[in-house]
Length: 80
Picture 1 (spheres, rainbow, N blue to C red):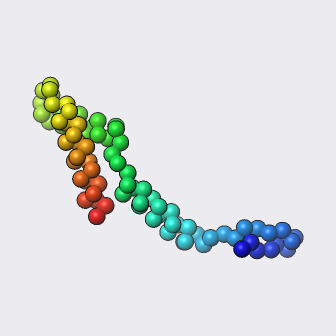
Picture 2: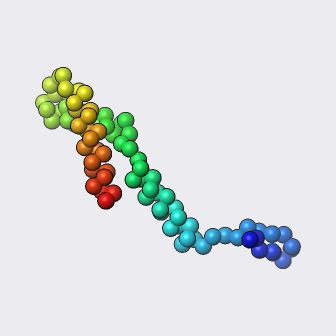
């Protein structure tokens, strides 16, 4: 409910800042848990796998899948 000011106009009530912070923190945490690895993150991890293999051609798809799997499993472990 809005409270009345001395000039008779209503101003919206403000939430307590600690309550707002808790809500924002919970929303941010839920978003981080749900976030999938981005294309760029997977591409970079796959490139590092390629370099670790000595830069040999022919396993780019496998590098991509392993990088994606690794990033997802790390997020699950860190969010637990």
